[in-house]
Image 1 (spheres, rainbow, N blue to C red):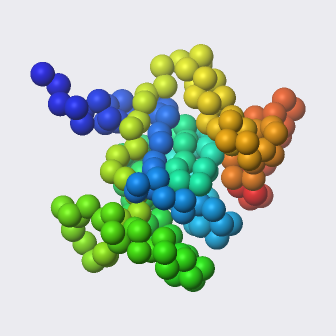
Image 2 (cartoon, rainbow, N blue to C red; image 1 turned 180 degrees about the vertical axis):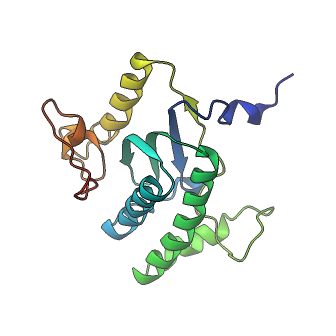
Image 3 (cartoon, rainbow, N blue to C red; image 1 turned 45 degrees about the vertical axis):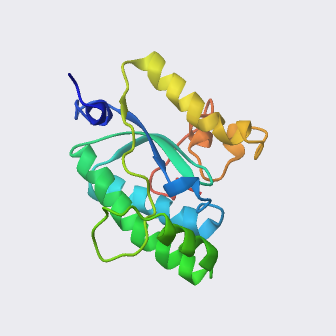
Length: 181
């Protein structure tokens, strides 16, 4: 019998994967530009330094979705979550969001080890290997339309923290500039 956790592993390291990473207890961490920028900078770092290929992404208030691929994908995601945890806690302190820091401390899993009293991310990212173009387009459409379904924007490309504008017909993506703005 297959363990429940094994279905959420990256079994094909060469495939693109749809991932979702959620803040513990769905707390609204990504409600400020500062917190969103922490995640954007981390994705950009992983793209440049760890050969992470980012096919699409969106940041919501309490989670993010992405379609990504690259070598050592599981390690890259783990490292990114570890880094962003520390950086997000620093950003929340700077923004004086004590109520949120208190919640992140309260919901820290008892089995967690380490030097922090907080837990930022839920465990896992529930990776789904992309099995062809049709699935890729379905996942990109799903993640890009997430802000529209929430009523935040009228059209996917209007969400600042999303790659939807890069997928518009005729869009030219120039990676030498900041593609995340």
